[in-house]
Image: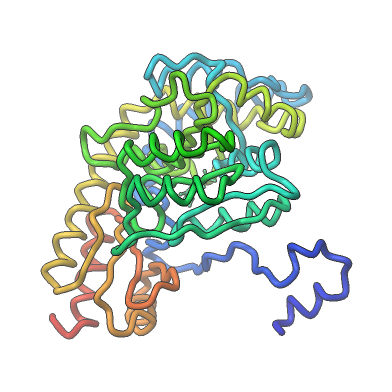
Length: 367
Ligand code: PMP
């Protein structure tokens, strides 16, 4: 038993938290951080200036609680998403992790189940145990794909209260067709299943990729979750949000903490949204680096998945742990997601990406 588990054993911890490990992507201080799918291009100087001004203004009223309904922010997010969405369709919290947690608090809980399709975002099972929701691991097809038929069949069989669909999926970077979302939604009709489409990385998808936002009209059990942590380069600010029928926001009002979005967070997010053109220009460069990584990994004889996100999942490695370590020795941190033969790397700046590719070729003996 680890030291941490031994210490915890002294406490009357809830049964379903016993023996599980906290979220633990390593935070190591090295020059090239390509391990947690952050936006590697930094916050542009103009955006830093806008945020600084907005936060300074908000600071003068920090004696007051913030707007509990974050009205201006919801309007700005609805405007950004388009698709005919109105402020009532939007909800936000401190990162999409908190949005997902609130969904589980409202629609999961003891005696209820949530279905995910691993390999997928590692927080889904942790959010489930934190809310005493049973997490069921669904099955994928070959090459980590998920077909509409298979997903729908599993939903019909299990009749879960909640389904997590992650598109583009973390860690594979691959996207789901909207046919999968539609089939899962229809399969969950009898069980009134809440269908979450986690689109944290949607902005990095290849041009013309449709969003599940287009499926929202008439589907009150469908929730599309997004974040400002990735495309908007705001992981440190903690702002995630969702679009859904207005009644979903009403349900989440029942579980959110009062004033959960600080005035500083609201001001920061609004300033970033006002500068979205600048930020989206960096997204375009990240997509170029991502495609470059896929091409180069292929030329090294590896098997990168087709990525629509800001990271690339690749297989064909005999000893991923040795590659991971060899990169770290050069100050490059990528992610070992625990899948045999595979690693995941976030697209960096052009210079960071070059450093990664050069070192990887060396480690593979191809330099
Ligand atoms: N969903 C997915 C698929 C993610 O990869 C992440 C972050 N790694 C999140 C949600 C949560 O992001 P945040 O809480 O920063 O919005």
